[in-house]
Length: 286
Image 1 (cartoon, helix red, strand yellow):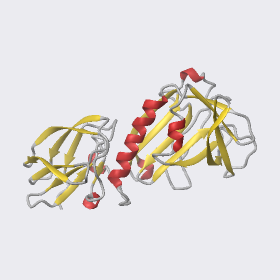
Image 2 (cartoon, one colour):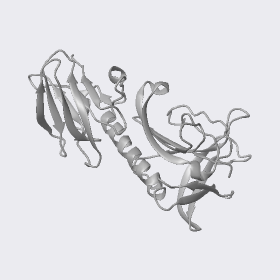
Image 3 (cartoon, one colour):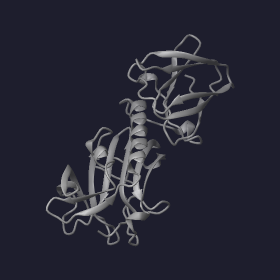
Image 4 (tube, rainbow, N blue to C red):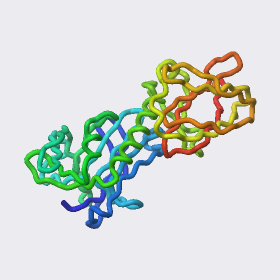
């Protein structure tokens, strides 16, 4: 397989971010790294998005790219699709030690211009068996059923995959099916913010594997109480903040927090995401 230059964004049929594929010089698999990142996707209304990539750092040379936003997850896998037409439904088989260990339905993604490289596109979930498969061993081979096999390194995949899945859970927990997810007011700090209190009663803390310290600053102009949402989905009072006050709170990625007014009405909720900023400005005041 010729290592390929890949995605700027993945676009699935489910209306995830746009896909843009471009060529790059052949690169040794040893130069590829698994990297988990987070960002605000301007092409998707500024929604907070997690990404998992296998490629050469600081370049567009990529072989694998998965994204997760409140809308869902999508993955693009680099592959020489030959003469297969764009949009053709196929099955991708994964092999280790000569044995088929996983199979996935996918769609052929063919480039729209002469410089684009073909690949396969499929939807994934945070608990998809694909993630377990990609954490085992040093490498894996895959193919469109009936076609030649390609190789993908798994060196360093386990840690990056777990960070990506934690980020994805936090993003999906924060959105909780509300349909909107906007970080506009906290874009400078690059943190995930759920503006609506409709999440309350639906979310709760899960796992305590990735510690993080967040500085909460009360810029709402009014009193705010800081509440942790525990493992049963119940609020636990931690701190009271007068207008303009701030403090550093130790917590964990994926643990929701709620901010209430004097009478105890929910005004805003927030869930920290790994790799994002460590400051959250409490600003909502309706």
